Length: 74
Image (cartoon, rainbow, N blue to C red):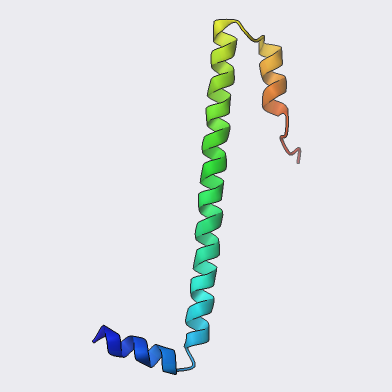
């Protein structure tokens, strides 16, 4: 049953729309995963800096400077 549906889609004019839809879905998924990875890395970095400050190997001012490096100001 599903095999017949696939053949109908491949032969019809809908193939372009199906490919376009899959392309859009792929882009959205890739952007979401990228954003998630960036957020996790940023949070991990913040925790590491906080740990360095807590153990005394870094001053709070140094930690603040490190956290603001690379930040995009709006």
